[in-house]
Image 1 (tube, rainbow, N blue to C red):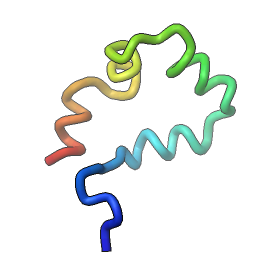
Image 2: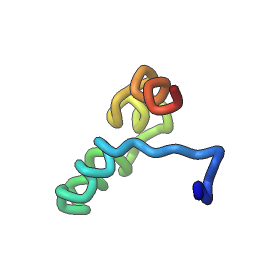
Image 3: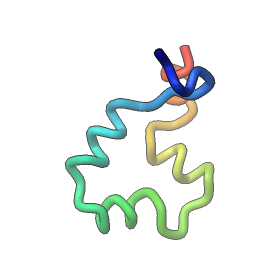
Image 4: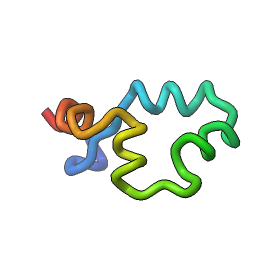
Length: 53
């Protein structure tokens, strides 16, 4: 049963997150980033579309 039928996730990004020191992840993906910058760093619009399909 899918508890979140309207959401999906990016398993490759989650794997990267889990193996990366949080401070490095925070610097690379969170600090001083706009939403557009975060999406680009996380794989870009094409990656988001691939997850949804």
